[in-house]
Image 1: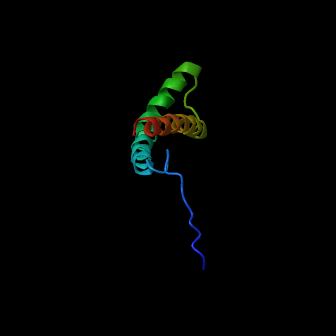
Image 2: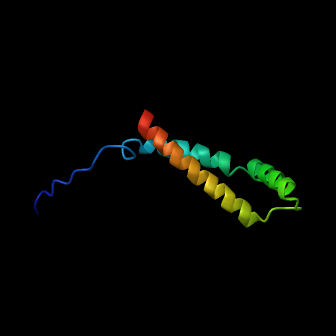
Image 3: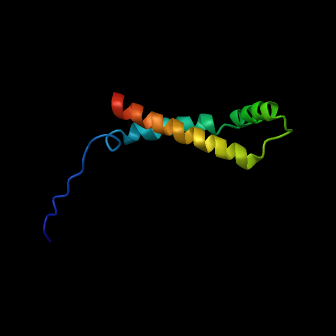
Length: 81
């Protein structure tokens, strides 16, 4: 069997995967923490004047926040590390 001589581009995310993984774990812990869910629920309930925000809506909001923060985190890790 021939040596395929496969090379990988060692830029960006591949080099910094450990840093991105560690920071994303911390970020997930913060964004998915029950205290933050309760805080956002109370805040949105007061703003839109309802008793309780449905759990799926809260989950969707936190998913979008996590997605946006992960995007920023990955750009920062690639730029600064």
